[in-house]
Amino acid sequence: MLKFSRFAFFFLFLLTGLLIGCTKEENKTTSSMEEKINKQLSSEVITQEKQKQLKPDSVLQSLKDGNKRFVENNLIQRDYLKQVNKTSQGQYPEAIILSCIDSRVPVEIVFDKGIGDIFVARVAGNIIDPNILGSMEYSCKVSGAKLILVLGHSQCGAIKSSIDNVKLGNITGLLEKIQPSVQSFPDYKGEKSSKNNEFVDMVSKKNVSETIKNIRKDSPILKEMDDKGEIKIAGAFYNVETGKVDFLDK
Image (cartoon, rainbow, N blue to C red; front, side, top):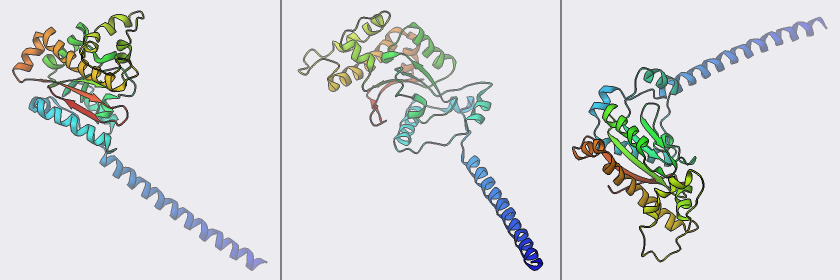
């Protein structure tokens, strides 16, 4: 019985040592993996010097590349906390994107952008008003953004409501801004209702071009910058079913 107790004690001692050793190795492995992951996280932000070097066409291409990564589920892994720290004393975004408020269109994500990369203005139907225009002028003339992108999308509730001529409180005035796009297809033979996805998408894309036209018409500042090539004003259309952004002709 005494021999067995000594053997049992020795066995437990040996097993405890092995377990402690394994735990230390696991901790080392976990720590190593965490360090590797942290090294892979991007904390890069746009500085003032980088922003000055940007060209409108290169910014547009960066959005195209970002959406390609999004669609392929190959997003850049970012250290957002470090980006928060790096941008806390200033921001130098490359673009301002005017989007609808639709929750299925998370702008920064679909273009694979980080903190400090882009300004985002959101309003139902991605229309403009003096406040949106003022925000765009601030973004480009004051803060140095190189691109204005108007982003429409499929299955847009504001577009559908305007097609169906909805009247409801303050929504009524907002939808009236979309009506010129709704009325732009007098020769269309299909059903002009919100149930016709083809017509809804046609109106959505037309609304993007109308918004761009109104930006140039109502903001001499932005038109002059665009004419000089200091900025580019472009349009795009997001598909809520695929996540893909199609960039529209200027």
